[in-house]
Length: 215
Image 1 (cartoon, rainbow, N blue to C red):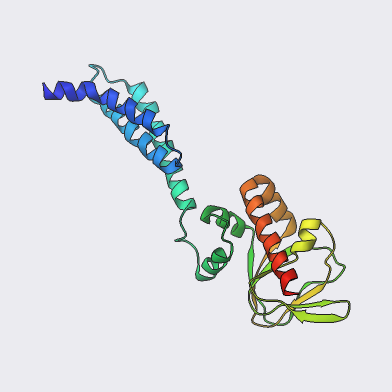
Image 2: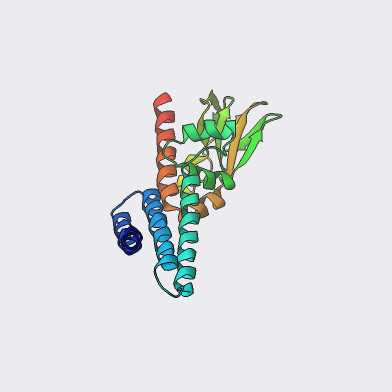
């Protein structure tokens, strides 16, 4: 008797859990519930019909695999465990970005450690790269005047946003640690990932405002 009730209840439990999943806004919770629902459906197909429904079992198993893969991707996008120490420092400075968005940004980035004085931007030249300095003090030279910038600052963001030549020459001293992004690759990434564009535009605008306030 109990086994009969259990068998008949499987399909209803699976359906109810599936409906409950559709009410969840959190994608991970939604997919976790769908995984449980799918497992119950598979169990139902094995224990209830007199003849095994292999077609239904196969496609339900495919559905289960897709959900498990997407759950893994979502969990990875929300975690920082694969970030290096320098990447964690940079990620902390890029507050609006999720770990997944940050990884996408870092795929097109190159880490640099200056061995000699490096010219990042030259006044009047096209801005082909955007930089972010973590360690070291960038020096800005404009119209014959020079002044230092704080570390943890973007370099080239004005030219990048305005698609204009560099308004000043910027150098970093030996030992400076910085990240560089090719401007074209960064623009292409922003087109593919609108959320990255929104977050990055906010970071660049905040950085420019901080520089203006310091000036």
